[in-house]
Length: 84
Image (cartoon, rainbow, N blue to C red; front, side):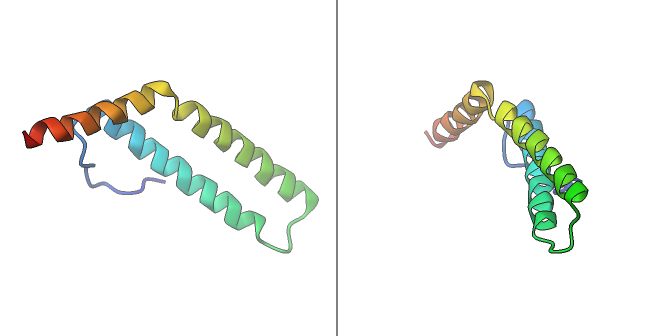
């Protein structure tokens, strides 16, 4: 489930890959939330969706670690350096 084949406006290829993966995972979370809004879910379906949501939440938490934040900060700094 890819968000787009268009390149991202970032220069760091690692950051670009991580952002694309983050977008994909966010779409997955949104789909799971939408599923939880269905009124006809069985208990087993609810449990399965919640388990997938838990796994996605853990993945997002790990994905958005200090290294990811540092890559974003570096990219932002490079934007300002390019304007000089």
